[in-house]
Length: 301
Ligand code: HH2
Image 1 (cartoon, rainbow, N blue to C red):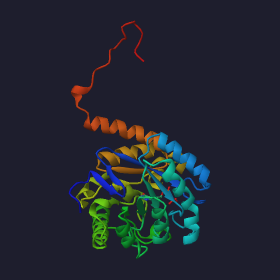
Image 2 (cartoon, protein in one colour):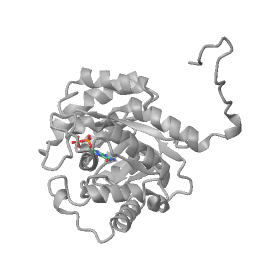
Image 3 (cartoon, helix red, strand yellow):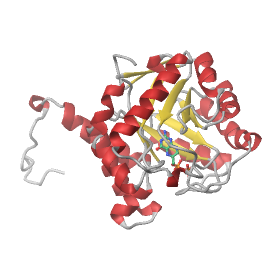
Image 4 (cartoon, rainbow, N blue to C red):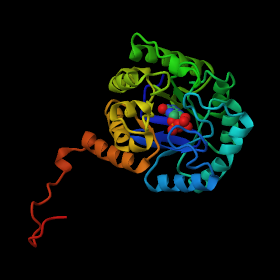
């Protein structure tokens, strides 16, 4: 869609994607799969967001409805009531950190954009609410178009792929075409293969392994591996013990072309990606080898 996947056009400016970016997850839900209830109060969520900002987060993604399989549907008014106080406050407290709203519903997105959010993260890839694409276009908002089949309630049964990478690429291409037809600027769009959404653990691992094959979508890629069950399948650990696995997945995603990762635990991922990026881009001539021993005879710290 765009020739330059190194920028993301957002209201109020462009987010440069010449280094990996970290999107921090702020769930205002009682039932999210890994942190449900952790930050259901607005003050708690703002404190967690502050810690993420101090750890170097680039974007904050706020959600008021869990997308885990079998999660309860949340009425529009309730979803707005959960997220709006956070968005209203966060745009003032963290003016340099674009706020994204994780929703499939146009009225929720509209309320958040009205309050100053700049991105709509739609896990349905603009397919759930027919009004979503035109809203994003009219507002000039940034948008994450994610791949999923079905809805969170039935997606676990919709994992029949012959070639998961080719089919996800094909289905994402159609969604990106629809976004363009609705008038959304190509530079405002980021695509996401939707790890764990209508994918088995093996399919999520395959997508991560072949992420480079999605590069020809022509838009920057965002990937959300954080604490997901495909990591649990590898590690045999519950969600809150998948932190190091999440870091590994983020680094691998970056090395395979992802520009943005969406995570719960920001600090280790910011560090890991900073090192990965330095290794990938550093000129070896810039690196001065440290002395084996400091001149006073003590080992260098
Ligand atoms: N994953 C989740 C939610 N939103 N958005 C994008 N773009 N990509 C993802 O991979 C993604 C997403 C699920 O994670 P979480 O928000 O922690 O859980 P829940 O949906 O249960 O609140």
